[in-house]
Amino acid sequence: MKHRRRTFVLFAACAGAVFGAMTWLTMELRALERREAEAKADAAFQASIRTALWTMDSYLAPFLTKEAVRSYLQYSAFYSPDLAYKDAFSAMACKGDFQMPSQLLYDGEPQFCRLHFQVKQDGSITTPRLPSNSLMQNEARWNYVSEGNLAHASALVGALEYIAPPEQLRVLALDALKRQKARMVQGDSLAAGASEPLQSSPGQQQAQGKQEWAHRQQTASEAYNTKPSASPPIALPETDVETGPLAPVWVGDKGKDRELMLLRMVRIKDEQIVQGVWVNWPDLRDAMLGLVQTLTPGATLVPTNSTSTEGDQLAGIPAVLVPGPRPAAVGEKAVTPISATLVIAWGGVVAATVAIGLVIRAIMELGERRGRFVSAVTHELRTPLTTFCLYSQMLADGMIREEPARREYLVTLKRESQRLARIVENVLGYARLSEVRAAVQNEWVDAANLLDRIVPGLVRRAADAGMQLVVESDLPPGVQVRVDPQTVERILANLVDNSCKYACGPSAGHPDRRIHVRARAGGGFLEIQVADHGPGIPAALRRHAFRAFNRASRDNSNTAPGLGLGLSLARGLARELGGDLRILSQVSGMTGATLSLTIPATILTARAEPAHA
Image 1 (cartoon, rainbow, N blue to C red):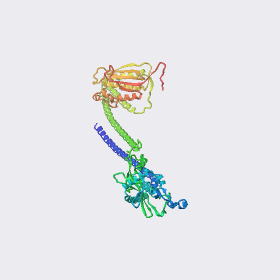
Image 2 (image 1 turned 135 degrees about the vertical axis):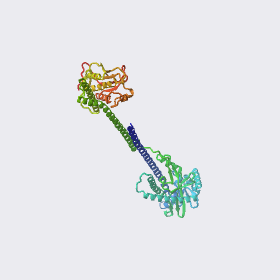
Image 3 (image 1 turned 180 degrees about the vertical axis):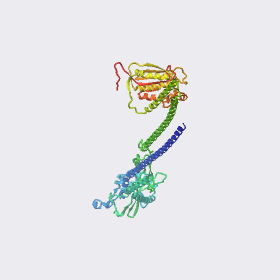
Image 4 (image 1 turned 45 degrees about the horizontal axis):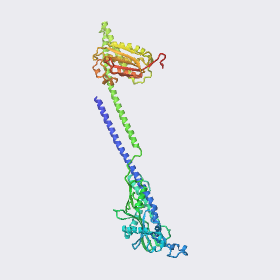
């Protein structure tokens, strides 16, 4: 028992170590899977941000290009194209008599533009939407404007002067051009190094964002640096006009809503003027964010004057995309390769542990059965062998001379030899239970005739033990069973032997020495009960009664011989016949043990014959 406990403790410790290692491995793999899912989610999130930036910069490019190609003449309410038309229209127009209205005057401000303006060298701010009084003296020019438009334009000019005085606008334009050039240089250097594709590690994702920003910066630079169109025709030779590129700049306090301006420097002969576009930033921002709402829900754009090359900054406008919260990482599949592998591994470990535990248990039980077998066989063989040696030695030495005594010794030797034969027969029969019995001699026999063939031998066995066998048969005619008669006889002989051992010994405590054999048929089975009037089998011990070499504690003090194979062998043989052997509960009129043997049977009519196969 101590060895058994030590073995199970060692097995439990090993199993605990294996399960602990598997638990640690599972936690590590699950953490790795979560980190991988987080990395994938972050990569997808960063990709959506880059896609959103590309989308917004692509949306900005036409707007910026349109403003970059706008002729400097468009910033005046009326301009004279006479020099350009003097060859074709010299007979129709005189110099200074014809002036064309600016497109901004009669079409109004384009989408996302509040006001087009220019700051002259004398510090005055003009807009094509607010002609001077001298230009408005001609009544025909009133067709292009209205009182309401003039008032609105005048209010915008006043607001512009409040937000950014003329001198500040000139300084801001120069600074914006410097920053624009710096951004272009950074973009060109980054784009030159973006020759190889990058993977998805955090550092590489950041580098990839910078490279994409460089490409977007190149696109924006092309839009900003597009040369102004030659239509409408300019009024001065190109050598007298130099138009610089547009540059974005933020105007206003950082703590308040800042206004976006697109400024450029224009030289007309010896005069330096600043031309600009006051952008309707809230409308432009909402339009761009609406395009990327599905990519970056909850995102916003924050103005900045930084020349940083971070991947979350727009290239067309100095604004940073601040994305909303990143979506939680969700596995694309319910069963991932790692989780499937873990399930298989856990299943294998559990199955292996259970299998090893069962094998250890079977080995230990086998060892215990072997020990019980050796003990039982040694105990059972000692008495007859001792008797054999002693009696045969005495007979051989002539110590027993009287004939009656010699006959008694010979009878004793015969009885002990039969006892040894039964022991050997039971051991061999139990050993053959686990073998495949291919040549079982089953035959169709009448149940009544079978019982008649078996009962005489059972009567003799009971009589030898001082017991009386009582046969009670209630079999209808025509009950046929397909069995091996010798197997049925062996089963019943073992049951009768058990009754003889335990129902007539000193521990029986009952004077009734009858053994009842009852036979009946019904429900497709032949049932043969063997009952006695002995002490019976306690209910707590019935579940172990059919185990091999298992004799109850009451048997250890009983002088009845036996190996503990009788019931185990009998049940095994019964199941080979397709039946079973059970211990019945208390039966009316019986105080001892009652065992029931059931065998499949067929009840034939007068005309029916069994199929002899």
